[in-house]
Image (cartoon, rainbow, N blue to C red; front, side, top):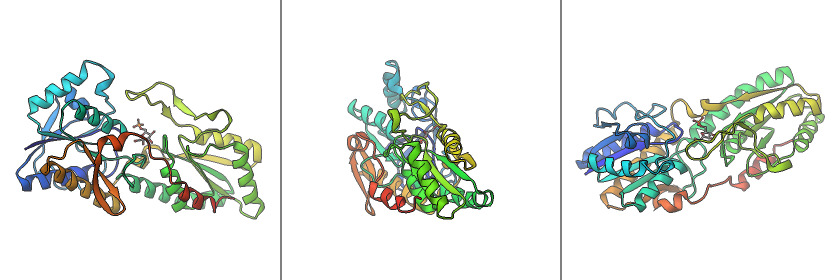
Length: 342
Ligand code: F6P
């Protein structure tokens, strides 16, 4: 069989681990693998490369994606879907594996409905894909946040400051909740739980009244102000999937906290650092298991599916189930994190 692979949307640690697993398992079964460059863009422009085992060697631990990625949405223009289908035919692909988040897998689902054999592998540092307990990339991002909080504690304490650490998380506060819990945050703001500035300030004041001289607040970029249900945006311009560019909540909160409490405050934006670097052991193993499971689905000709983690088992779910809604934070875990708020 001829298998195509692409990586779409924001990159994350573990993409190369999936590519390696797919290529090496496919080679053992006698399948040929073609890598599509830069996500769906490569199927519009016909930009691809052959992936033999040599090309997929030595990449397990590397961050990013050797195939490149983009946020291209072929369904944003009516000219592009026919080009994509035509190019899949030109390449002679029997199946296409899309490695991505809800946007990329949403396209794979639409193409499946149009007769293309597609399989999805769930990726995103945001962990907001439904139908799977975890996406790969998330654990690596959480570790980056945890390490940042470990480092920030000493400077916050030395200067008796409040630090507001802005992390990624557009619709869901998974990174903020897990990263904050692992790094000992004193307050965590997530999109699932709209907040008021006064409740944040009151919590910090309580903590300082009990003798602490510094605080660390973790805020997801998509955290929502209860007053007016607003999110803070960097740019209202929308990308091909209709998303605005978030960012700025850290700076905003910092100013408000300093004005209302009198405590000196600084903001730290972790930004794309959270998507960089080597995958953790957990993500390397999860990504590898996903890659192997995707090839197993091809062997069974079980298309229109997404591989998923349920408990400790990798299973197959329909792509439809995978993309139908965002997975928000498990509020039981958030409740645990709240135990440590001031
Ligand atoms: O991949 C998802 C994500 O990490 C979001 O949390 C964030 O809003 C977005 O990527 C930013 O991506 P970029 O700057 O690459 O468009």
